[in-house]
Amino acid sequence: MPERISPELCIHIIHQAYHEVVTDPTNLNKYKSFTDGVYGEVSLQFVITMIQDERMRLVETDRFIDLGSGVGQVVLAMAALSPCALSVGVEKSPIPSAYARVSDLW
Image 1 (cartoon, helix red, strand yellow):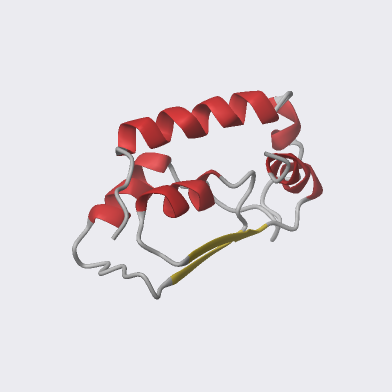
Image 2 (tube, helix red, strand yellow):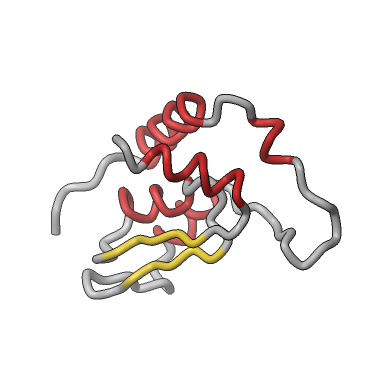
């Protein structure tokens, strides 16, 4: 298994990327509350806890798909910290999706 970066470094890199790409975070809050397109946000620390939990039993043949991935922070954390072969995000909201696509250019 390839060597992984530390969770702390991963969070730092993801935060740096977020602040570089998301030029106006207030744009991410432009949605109508309590509609079926609104869902909760998962913290990076919770994702790290899930990855590190032995009950998850993540292996190299697993694939991770984040439905409602926002700007892709959870997708990046899974790619960096888990042994999963693939980490993909799907986002239907145009604003976070556009921010996530900017990161494709890196």
